[in-house]
Length: 378
View 1 (tube, rainbow, N blue to C red):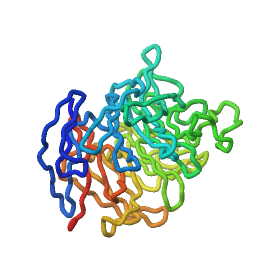
View 2 (cartoon, rainbow, N blue to C red):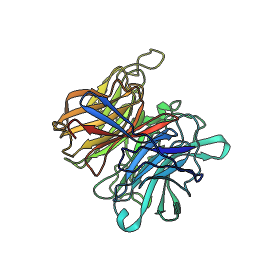
View 3 (spheres, helix red, strand yellow):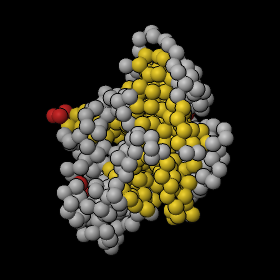
View 4 (cartoon, helix red, strand yellow):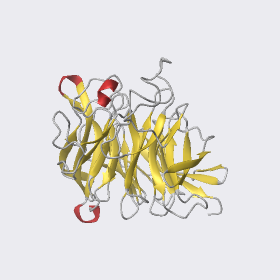
């Protein structure tokens, strides 16, 4: 498979694959209202996540298990990536740079890990990026979701570094094991918080509690595929998939229970009511929810100034909804929703802010694209 880089993109106009083939690519731009959508790269195999290097180049994960370094007219495959369980919703998932990447070159990957007996589970590994050799070295697994399970759904999984350097990992409840999201003796339906080497922070909420995993930060989640630190408050926000309705935005409060599957908005796929309904004492309410579901994935708090009127906005992609959603914030409240790119017909898997202040998107397709949004008048 080859990755095509658009001539209009800042990355150049070459095609680079694992084979030595180079050719020209025609410019690709589409207009959607006041936004121009520019294709930076296409022919990506279900790209899942995007991270910017300090020099503006990008790391992109493909669910089948490939990590690519995109920039300077090249799309280079990085070797040394851990083996992944690329089935259903599983595979190579999120990528994040260490807070000290400029000096240590460490990157972190979350992925569906194959395990003995046909089982799998979300794992996090870190390794040193050797860009000249196009490989990861000294790869270590620093976290494994327990228990493993044979199903192929609801792995999560996003990575977010807190200002104190600890790492949050969002974990799905593996669909069939939803009831375990309320139990503290496992990692199903949880957000965990670990140190960068995988050790446990001493101030985690369940450290020292009998029968509880000490890395758990919050619990009662379904399938959180979005996570980001709010730059105004330095607090983690997550977005998780509901069933038929009930996609939720949550502020991740230390030790809190977010209710799944006891409470939730919407219904189960069968049409049945979810647990006790929408409220229960001791369980958190979402900041915002969607009913019907849009299947949100990826998120970013926009801090740039390239789009007039979009400061203080939260963006998320939508898979089933096939759009980009802008949520205008007032403190910790959502006061307005704007649906963008609804005519593009693309499942948007991730959204990130680039060092140029523009928004970049990944589309979840076998011929997926890396896109950037150009505001009117630019």
